[in-house]
Length: 361
Ligand code: PMP
Image (cartoon, rainbow, N blue to C red; front, side, top):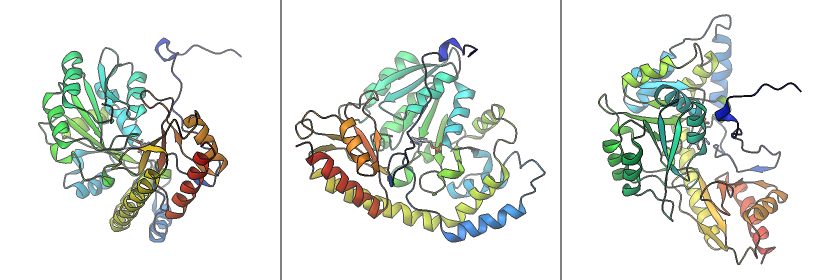
């Protein structure tokens, strides 16, 4: 092998992966458990024939951005679209972080924020959540005044801990941050809060959203940011030409026509989430509250008879259910995360979990 060394600052890094094990019940990556409606598929199939496949797509994705803007009561010039919200976050970090700049996160949180920031060459500084995984204003203030970050990330609801940030905390972070504030709202539809109302031309706020969770379109890879127009222009500078293919643009426009279907799906997931939490609270677990489509939990040491989250994770997998093992993440000792699935998937999870825990009594 004649490998060539990658950048020095990337040496210690590995890629970000969630294992894609072939298993009956997959509750590890927070997708929607509900498929898009048949009408969506019919319209998409028709759209395949309408695409001019020999031509590049609309580089500005104007029709899609206009449709997304209409959903939020803003214009296309306040919307930037990308291949999943991860790519959108990458664009924000390419534009505003990079070598010599600083990015703040509050751990534990979505690992990709720090990961992408480091790939751009930025220095990552981390604040901490409190013992209940809530973010406190004095901790935010400490990080802002010590490090003056160029980009500050909030994640609301926070992955993997589950709760939305207090609106007063979001407001004070925006008021006090010296740079850009990104509010990652991948799970906002499952929660009562959104930071969208903080966006105006004088604000330095970007709210990111995704089609992967509530719009039942994780396979398509589509996400967007809502922000002031000057920011959208900056993001266009760092984006490759024609980055969003023509069919995906159509898929997004068509999906937006099924708003009701999405909203029903969200209600169903929220109801299932509460049912799961209630059932899990009867088991020897610590279960954190959630305003998202997943639940963080930790097997009690006594009940697990010294067995780790890894052992429970394996027992669940042996029972045909894949959840996310978060136990190696900073601040999440012995924690697992389960995505809310369909009622029958959730039933299968509860059965497997009960049996995994009782095997360890
Ligand atoms: N933000 C958060 C908080 C997430 O949990 C995820 C998905 N795991 C994403 C962004 C990325 O979603 P996507 O790239 O599928 O839009």
